[in-house]
Amino acid sequence: LLLDAETSQRGFLLTQDPKYLEPYEAARRQIGPDMERLKQLHQSDPEQERMLEDLSRVVSDKLAELAQTIALAQAGNVAAALDIVKSDRGRESTEAVRKTLSDLLAGADIRLGADIQDMSSGARYLSFATIIGALLVFLVGAGSLFIVVRYTRDLVRARTEVQTLNETLEERVQERTTDLARANDEIQRFAYIVSHDLRAPLVNIMGFTSELEAGVGTVRRFFDEVDVDATNTTAGEAKLALKEDMPEAIGFIRASSTRMDGLINAILRLSREGRRTLKLERVDFGDLLDLLAANIQHQVSEAGGEIAVIRPIPALVSDRLALEQIFGNLLDNAVKYRDRNRALRITIRAVEAGRNVHFEVSDNGRGVAKEDHERIFELFRRSGVQDRPGEGIGLAHVRALARRLGGDITVESELGVGTTFRVSLPRVLRQQGLGQAVEGVNS
Amino acid sequence: MSSEPQAVTIVMVEDDEGHARLIEKNIRRAGVNNEIIPFTDGTSALGYMLGSDGSGEASARRHLLVLLDLNLPDMTGVDILAKVKANRHTRRSPVVILTTTDDQREIQRCYDLGANVYITKPVNYESFANAIRQLGLFFSVMQIPETD
Image (cartoon, rainbow over all chains, first blue to last red; front, side, top):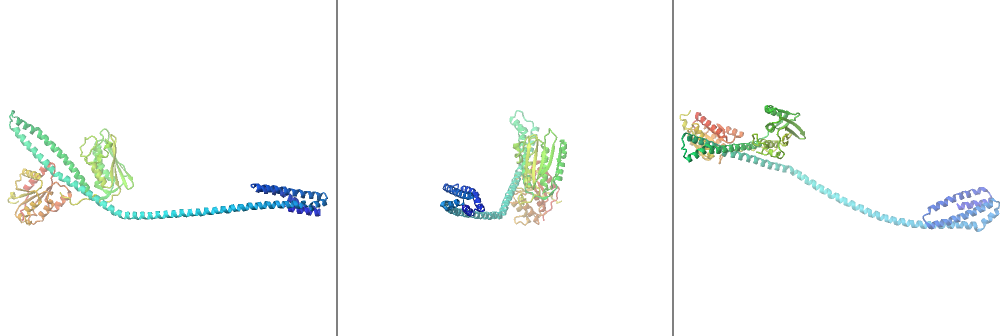
């Protein structure tokens, strides 16, 4: 730009033609902003700033010189202007500008070189980092691959194990089932034989007690006929024994053996029920419940109560006789243990639960105390006031039956409020090896 | 009717001596005075009825009525029943099963094998005595064929 200005100055000086001045003016206008730009670019470097100040000083000298010559020329003193140009001042100032500029450039070069060095060392660090990074990536990759491989191997092994287990599972279930069935059969057989064999001595006890009683009666009649000497104390004691002690003893023997007979019969019935082969059929349960309800209807009506079978009641595939016994027993209990202070109300409803159906037999009877909820299902155990005849067999029997039908029974009850028995039964009972009848038990 | 009904011999196979005694007492009370031969095990009873050779020849021309308990120490009464009913000489002899078993299958099996009467011994003595006395009455009007 300075050169442009100088050239146009010279042209103007030579030709006196103002046209040559145009590039000079343009250059002059542009030099100011250019200097500012340079200053901004090199702000960060104090050395370059100093050089730039030199430059701007030299440039303004030059511009001042140029302006001076042009002013002289415009004033008509072309010769004087030419003198100045001829003198070394113009050349010197131009030289100074050139030198300063080249210094500036050299400084920039050096700085650039340093920058490049910095950059290349930076690049080296970067490549180191990249290599390390790559190594890490590789390690992580290898590690995860190893883990994946190990995991997969474990998985495969586990699957093989599961498969083996699965294959043997059927077999083991079969084995267990057979064992259980055998154990069950054994218990049933045991109960049957024991109860049966207990019966034989009981027949004797009862029999000879009766014989004894008859004998005592005969002797007593004899004593009644024969006048006993009142002074004979032995005879008096004998008469007392005959009239009071012996009948009392016989009474106790008879009562106990009768009770024992009841218990033995109960065990016998339970074991026989357990040995009975279930006959599976489709049972219209609603009709069955209606029938059972009708059976106790007159007892319920007598007590001023009512019984309701709430539909819908689903049909079941099960053993009809067992179902009759279960629900017949529950309904009998509801009537038997009603609260006499209020009208009896029995409700039967069915709640479907997946493959099972829960049947609820609810009453507003005297209820069962909480601590007896489990006990009432035990054989020969009863709960509450013992004012009704019973052996404590019914619910034990019901539970055994419900379990044989693949279900169970639970009770919810509050003393003095009522009782709900919930019998859970499978919709479709599948015949299993368990609980099958044992053939050929003789006695 | 056999010309000499008192010639009928009652063979009682019962291992429980108490039962045997009670049965005998009540039969007597019913007015039956026939000879009662008690056995407490199956082997000796079969020995008497079929003879030591088991042919049954020993019972030829005898009038036998068998009272049989099913629960015996050495064999079941069912075995005895089968043997008696299978033997040419004893098959017409009436057999009364008198036992504590009231198992339906057992009862059916006995009738299938040819038992004539099946009575369950009730534990209640009155019923028991009654059943035996009625059995005694039954014996007194019953025609017992002579064995071949």
